[in-house]
Image (cartoon, rainbow, N blue to C red; front, side, top):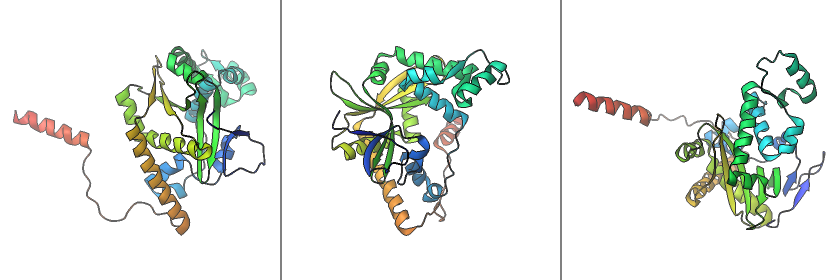
Length: 287
């Protein structure tokens, strides 16, 4: 698969400077030195936001996100480890309490959250292209280390017919239509992720990644989904952004200075949507 070599994680192992590692726990991955895309997002806001970030505490939304990923990427594991109680609406119910004793609170889904995860799984499996990528040979939740950079691939796989090596990232969204998801790409810097993960793959293997896909799945019924691949220009911009953030990170590490926002005065405009609303109202008054 494009020269990829994967090693299995073992507790207490010495983490290589350049490797793909399977089975690495989340807490170990996030404790490693270096920086990931989420860290670069904080650097992009300000180095101070990165330096003084709080330790990650799992929220219910994060637990549901993990459930969705497991359902789509590892359906057999999802079936074995998770309990869906669609009819239970009150966590004080005895059925819920018994299920928690076996599976833990994070793996027992009730009411609408159970409906949504099951519905997303069914909808994605019914979408031909999404199903093809999800069921292609490859690795799930694969950690990657390349010098100071860290990446965690939802899926790194290959298509047997074409030999294409690809990365796939699952994004839960409210609207998977192109215009709406493009806004999500810009707002959450998904283009930065695509560029970074593509470069990390090339740095480790010496080969270019053939494609980086996003699977956008709507959280609400009917859980419509679309597979997207960013245009080359979007990847170029994403690469420029993460390299600029990385330069700032290196500079802060060298100087041991982590500044916040600039302190100089700055003129501030109203948001474009509000200015457009005002101009429309003014035009109506003139008419």
